[in-house]
Image 1 (cartoon, rainbow, N blue to C red):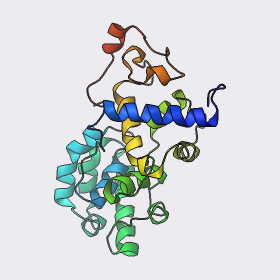
Image 2: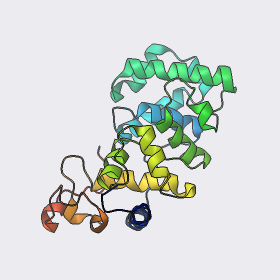
Image 3: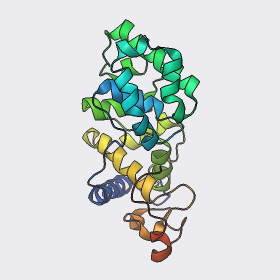
Amino acid sequence: MPANDSRTALVRRARKINRVLAETYPEAHCELDFDNPFELLVVTVLSAQTTDRRVNKARPALFAAYPDATAMAAADRAHLEQLVGPLGFFRQKTESLLKLSQALVADYNGEVPGRLDDLVKLPGVGRKTANVVLGNAFGVPGITVDTHFGRLVRRFGWTSETDPVKVEFAVGDLFPKRDWTMLSHYVIWHGRRICHAKKPACGACPVAHWCPAYGEGPVDPVAAAALVRTQGPA
């Protein structure tokens, strides 16, 4: 936390930022398309090293061919590679999907478990993926620490941790559990649209007043406005 922040002041400032982001992004939601927990689990695994929009484009053909864990567990490897090929790292991702689906069939009768302890035991599933699935498919509060979330909470001074698990616990300690899932969406949306990694649009930022990192990017409103994206990266 900033040197002049008491614990109480930090909590108040963090919750104020969250309220303003909620007002700024009332439409915030998981930007991966899905119809059920299995689809969300798969597309979240596929989203590594690529963008949500690319995953969403590949999704219809993938689930038309392999709509559930049982079908995907028995998938033809070459065909599955072809379907996920546009997303990069297609051999690794194909292997992950096959092992993941086979584990779901073997251990959970083809269903996605709704507990974090069970999810993180699945091949290729870490806490970030598990929290995405829990928060958005099961309504279980969870904090999703992706690169955007980690960058912003450090800029906000909510934590200085860099390890994703430590970030998750440090930030979670500042907010009621019921807020965790939507907090993740608000922060990630802000990171994709305004608080960019290399040149944040500080002069167009709705939470600039409470941000210790104000000034890392252009503060001139016109220059900052030119950096604002209306949606996440392609």
